[in-house]
Image (cartoon, rainbow, N blue to C red; front, side, top):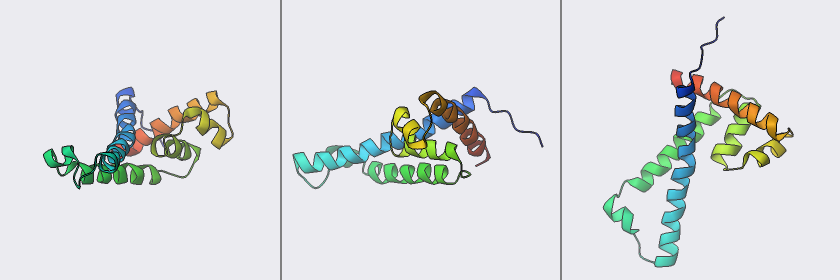
Length: 121
């Protein structure tokens, strides 16, 4: 069985896709912060773009679903902790019980695995 070669631009695409979780989480947190500290029922940006907050939540769900749909392995765990939970690579290495350099190698493999899966979906 031949393994499909993963191109660096495919890896960059999937990494940007995964980074979207963090960005959308920040949008949701900022909206909560704005409501809590500045009052009002609706955030100012929600009045201008009312669908952004639900869309951010949907994107977060899609990215989490994508990661959780990968095969069970330490690469999946690293993607989950780094991109979904927002842990640093150092913390991911500690959680996985490996060295920091090994964690970065796992991340490279994980992004290749994710890029192959992303290309199929």
